[in-house]
Length: 511
Image 1 (cartoon, rainbow, N blue to C red):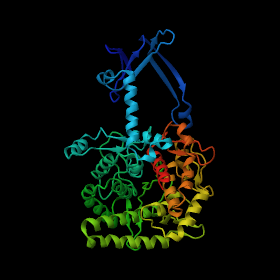
Image 2: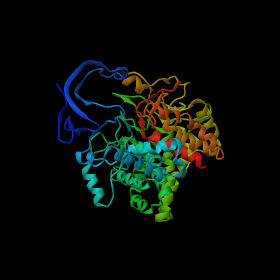
Image 3: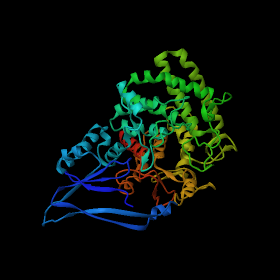
Image 4: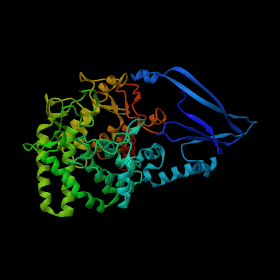
C-alpha cells in the first residue's frame, strides 16, 4: 500500500509519512502551478548500489501525483518544498530565501580565519557547518545545559549514516569550529562531552535517538585533551579549563589505576594498554559479527602517543592552576612513558615504529599511519632522531594523492579496494583503504621535520581539491580505494575529512 498521504491545504500541499518524519510541505511559489493527484507505483526496481553493497536490492516507488505548470515563453516557475512549518515557509518569498542563504554563507566565511575565506578552503568552511548540530533527542541534557547558561552541541561524524562519535568530534574540533571562527560552539561541544564522562572515559558514540552513550573507546578521551588544548590556544578561555580540570585529573587517575575494557597503564613501563574480548577500542574498529578485523589489544602506538601528549598537557594545566606539587606525579608518569615508548616501539629492521607491542601475538610490525601521531601531536613522544626514517617509510608506502593508506601494500592483509558486501568492505576498511583525515597528522609531522617547507606540505593536499567536485559536491568523502583511480567510498561527507583538510589548507598557507 501507499506509505504516504498527500493532501491539498490552503497554502499548498502537504505530504505526511511515518510518525518519526516531519511532513513535507510544497507549493508553487511563482507561476501558474497546481497539484494533480494521480497516484501510481512501480514495482521490482533494481537498486544497483544496494546490490553492490550486499543489501536487499529490489524495491518499489510510489508517487501521489505531480505539479503541472502551464508556462508562456520566458515565464518563470518555482516550486518550494520544505519540512519547516507553513509560517516559516511563507515568511520569505523565493528571492528573499535566496538572499538569506547567500547572507548565511557570507557570515560563515567572514567569521573564519582570513586564510580560509577563499578558494577550496572557503568551500570547506561552508561544508563544516553541516556537521555542527544541537542534539534534539537528549532533552534532559539540553535542559540541564541551558539552565546552567550553556548550550548542547555535538558533531555528526558523517552523512548519511553516522551519529555523533567522541573520537571524530575531538579530531574534527579544530578544523570545524576553531579555524572557522566558531570557538564559542567549540566550548559548548567540550563542555557537552564533559557531562558524559564516566569511569574516566568520554562516550565513543551515541546510538541514533538514544540518550545513553557507549564507551568502548581507548582513544577518544585522549583526543579530548588535544581538542581542549587547541580550543585554549584559540580562545584563551581559562574558565572552561578551571571547570574541566577536576574531570581531567579524574581521567588521569582512572587510566593509571585501570578502567573499563582493559584500559590501564602498565606499572612496569608506564605505557597504556587496552583491550577486551569482542571490543574494538581504537579508531581501527571494523567488526563483522564476532570478527574483530584489526584486533589491536595491547599497547597501540597512537594510543601511547596520545597518552603522553595528554600527560604533558595535563601537567602544564595543573602546574598553572594548582601549583608544582600536584603536577609532579603527572610529570613522572609522562617521563616513564616517554622512555619506554622509545625503547619499545622502534622497529629497526623496517625503519619505522611497531603498530602494537605486547599484543596477543607479541609485537606487530605492520606499517600503518598510526605512528604519525608520535611526531605530529603538540608533545611528540618519539625522539627526534627517529622522525625522518618514520616519515620516509610512511611517505613511501602509505601516502596517496587523497590521504594515507591504512596499511602498506606489502602486507599480506592488504586490500586495494573497499567494495562489495559488508564483510568484504569491513575486511578492507583499515587494511589498505585510504583515509582522507590522516593527511592532517601527516602534514603536521612533515612540518615538524621540515618547518620551512609549507609549500611542499600544501602539495600533499592538492590531490583532494578535484574531489570537491565529485561524490558529495563541496565536501570530502570518508574513504577512498587504496589504488588508482582512488575511487571515493563510504560516507559522501565526513566530518574529520573536511576538518583536517581545511585545517591543513590554512596551516600550510599560514606558515
